Length: 179
Image (cartoon, rainbow, N blue to C red; front, top):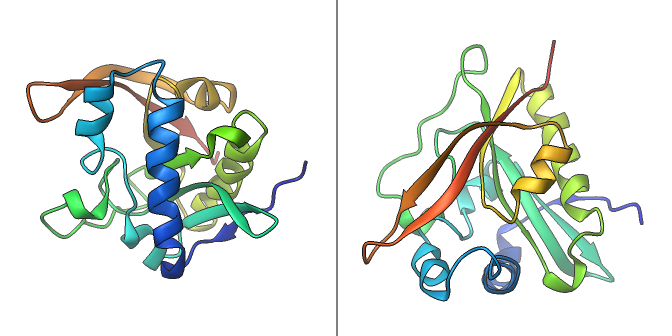
């Protein structure tokens, strides 16, 4: 199927919050414990309304129902919901910084059908149009295969600190988008 992303609106937030939770608790389950997933909701996984307000967050629908979302940012944060951010998220400089690819979540019933790739393609086109040469992201272990097949390369593997002495293994990745 040829998925066509549209920009998310603030009216989509309640549906996105439910989609994020479902996606995390089902698709991330083979990679992270229930305790890790619960502790990561908010600090790592969640809706960032700033991406929506900036016009850089996309959704894909089937018959009017949102089944996938993801976006990019010209701001410093690499991940996390807006509820987890205490300070203003600084802007990046396209001449020296990499744009951020952020917050991809797919409904489990629709996983592995090209929705993530369609959203990533829309993000990369917008990133290039905004004057950025590179994109950077922090992938979950479940998301890493998508980014690898789309040309991203690993920079480092590390542990994102969570509450309760828990951590979340993640992969920082990058891709050159423009010559």
